[in-house]
Image (cartoon, rainbow, N blue to C red; front, side):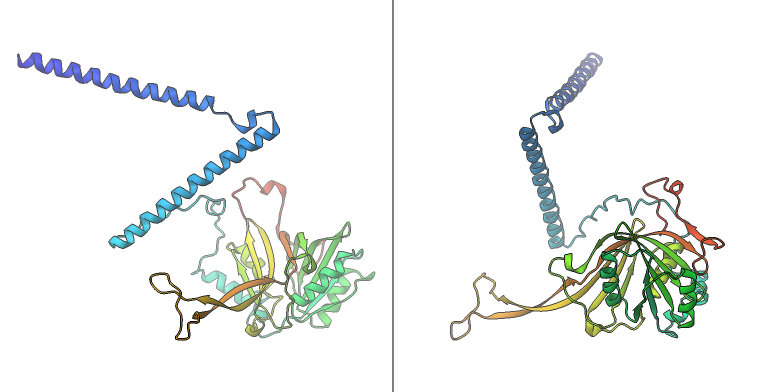
Length: 361
């Protein structure tokens, strides 16, 4: 009798398991049918209906995202109230944090790098033994926007001087700049009436960096722009991680004096992201704003005379002074400018762009 009961129980369990599997399969089929029935905006031919469906889907996604963020914040708050550690936030996958491994990435304990820094061409400027003196000139065929860009560069870089190019050869200009104790030479190249390249030559022994210039926005085209003062600016260089990036950063650093005047509240930023160097020129401002105080019940406080009590709060904000542009390194050459016999440290070639996650700076 006991054996028959066990067999019956096994049969019943097997039948129940089969029913559960069938239910799962049916649910999957229903989900697939619903997905097929779901109409994508790209399937709709009418433009107005297509845009309406797209806007609706976008709004639904936004609402779902807000709900998830609210739920996450509530969980974090609850964990803090209970004295527990909140769950670590997920780090989103980006092209930057999934970049290909590079052996040339600088490390903080790299003694060889520090030794190279002490012996390179810019050590005397960065150690404040020499003050930077910059000569700025143009290509032979200048444009309408070129002089406006150079006049703003002269305001950005302290101790910079502009000389007209005329018909002089670049090698002769380099020799003249050496005799006049200039530390760097900047050539603004123009094409089709638009500045399209920057050539930075370190003096007297190089190196020469060639940058592609794009997305130039002058000060007059920036909304609510500020006017810079003559104070020496603070220099911010970010995300120059590899050996090549570090050398590029030092070339840029050698253009600016190493003793900023903080009274001027000027900041010059060169931010490297995906081998594009973004230039920004800001001035930070401190503003005092009045904020009305309230008690624990939410009622506004009043003094003995019945007037509302206000508290001053200092707020810091940035005001862009311009210009605004983007640089991309094309080549880095040993010594001063020499197209025929010069040796190149690094040259960008189209064959090098094998992956979106491969960066050189």
